[in-house]
Structures are given as structure tokens and as C-alpha cells.
Length: 266
Image (cartoon, rainbow, N blue to C red):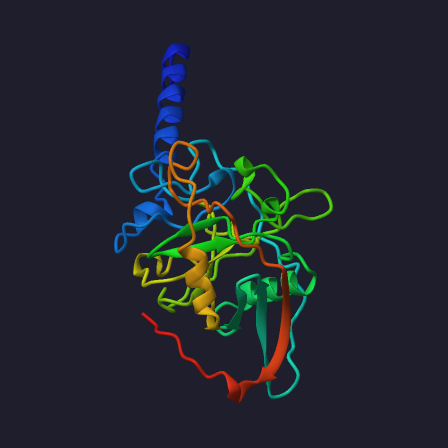
């Protein structure tokens, strides 16, 4: 076979590299995928969310670090005839959450594990958007600088973030639904979660729904309607002036018949 001149080979390699970079820049983001709501999508980490008129929510202007899914959380086997209910205690009252283990088993195990180990204790609801949702679960909100809020997650003893593989399902993001916040990588959900205060169908099939508030939506409403910082310090107008903390989170086992609320599917 006739060899191509060295100069032609170099030009060919350069063009191939350019095409690869261009293709990588066209990856579809969660914000581009949704269209049913104008509210910014829940995001986390240095990949933190911004408003729709700014860079896509949940996506950083910088390259996203590689995140490896983990199956660390232990198996959850409720006592016969019971189901686990998460209770989040705040100064405004309790928020109680039932789970959808058939729809998102790994995500449910992860959340229960974090509740049982005290991971959520002291974390704050750092992002509140009236008419959309409240977001919490970031360990940085316990004592870290405000600039780091929304960037944290569950990590191992070496500081590596532990994540859960996406379990997108057919449950509709309606008022009271609890879902996992994530970055552009579908498998980047870790510990941050959000609770919808209104219909948010644009998030369906793009975020993992794993639970529903069965008691305490009045508490959620108080949190989402609290005064926000706004202005230059808070361009998204979503940071509460006095963030409400999860004082303690725990799991209770209750009879299945006591909680038979259904979730809409799509």
C-alpha cells in the first residue's frame, strides 16, 4: 500500500481530534432534555445549578470529573408487614417520606443508609425555589463556606464520592415527590435530594424519583417560602437567608397498610 506523506497524516490526525472535541461538546444535558418547566433543574457539586438563562442547571462550564457508581449501601429488609419511613426532623416540624423500592431500589437503600448512619444530621436545605422545589443533603452545608454549598456528597474514607447508578422511572415529578439531585452524568447522584412543591413534569425520566412526602408538606412549604438572599450574592435567588437544617434523620418501620399513597406515573 502506498504510504501517505507525513504532512498529510498530521493534518488528518488534527482533523480527527477536532471532530472528537466537537462531538464531546454536543452531549445532551439534563437542562436541554427537559422542556415542561422553566425552573432550573436540581443539580449538585461544582456542577451546581444555575438559572435557565445561564449555563445549564446541574452542569459546570468545566469538564466534569469521572464518577464511578457504587453499591455500598447495605441491603434493607423491613420486618414482615412493615415498610421503612424516613423522618426528617427540623425546627419547623417533621417531614415524613415513604419510598418506592420497586422503582428505585438502589437509591432507596442509599437514602436509608445515609439516614441510619446520621449522615443527614445537621445538613441544611440550601436551595429553595418557590413554585418548584427545596434541595438539601449536602454535607458542606453543616459548616463549609457558602461558596461550597451544593458541591458536596457522600464520600468514602479516602474522599472519593460514592454515587448511585441512575434509576429513572415512570413516576411523575408532582408535588411532594422526592428525587435525587445530580450533575450532567446520569450516574452522579450521591446524597443531595430535592422535594417538589409543585408539578415539575419536565424532570420526568431525567432524575431518579425514589419517595414521596406523606406528612409534613406544610413544613416543606414554610421552607420554600422563606426569605432568600438574592441580589449579586445570590444570582439564582435560591439561597435562603436562614437555611433550615435537618436536625436529625431516622428510619421508622410502620405497617404497610398505614401508608398506601399512590404516585402518578407517566
